[in-house]
Image (cartoon, rainbow, N blue to C red; front, side, top):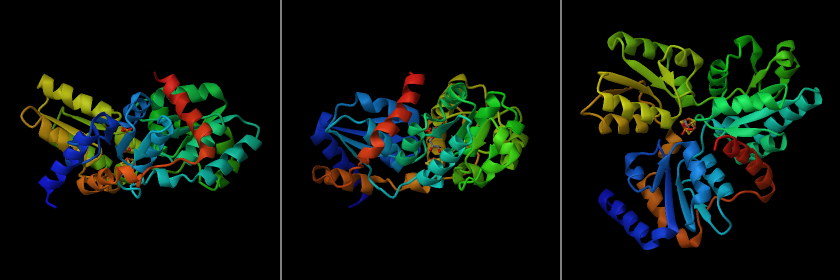
Length: 347
Ligand code: 13P
Ligand code: SF4
């Protein structure tokens, strides 16, 4: 089938299901997918919208952890589909639930109250462990509020899996670097003097796209070519990058800033450091008003696994239930607890 036939078939199926089908998509999805989506958003926005959806079928165009959270927050009888189950965030894979649990048990045995705070880019099993240990989930939109919350709950915080978001957010709260320690997944470093005294323990995880493909010298180069113009990045970039940028925030923040800059028309160029599908969309949307430049042409291969053919295949077999994301019953209550702590603190 050619592209236009696939597109038309997807639209036919959407029409057939009407209000019984809602398609959600993350901002990193390619345009060919976004054009079929009912709700497009960042991780926080998409999680927030789930409880209000009444449709029996929810198709989530994004990565596995997002669909897992959607499945957890969905109503009884609703089904959440992910077009490609192998679309699994590389960062989320860096924190295994059993390792997180062992580290938290070791910390609990030390007598200190260490509160876990899990970035939403983590498996549901990790969210469940975090929930059982009194912790919560956060997204890049509310990491500052949630880190402040976590510090109030105990003596120290274990931030996972993203060491960069952890460090960048700690800087906003004025936590000195000497009070932060990156640990190892086996928990060996927990025995060190500095880890025992640290206020913030960081899991050794990162987003390979934001950490490895976006470098400080790229920011310097842009500033040199476009003096006075801003570089805005996602906080999954390393602190070395974020520290020399002109702002950082979630995908929703980056979109808002591009929109404002295009409306004001006072900046000749704006550089954006995040996944390329989103940056490319902004470049095209505002091409007549501002020169939007990507910090790097970095695409997320997991997000790319969802495309028009896989979306169509999912829609074609909706009735069979194939492709449904299910959640282990035993994980539901504790994982929901950690997610609800975030949703309640960030209404
Ligand atoms: P947002 O929470 O900003 O949508 O980002 C999610 C993500 O995976 C970034 O790499
Ligand atoms: Fe995960 Fe990075 Fe892809 Fe975001 S861009 S989904 S953090 S691998």
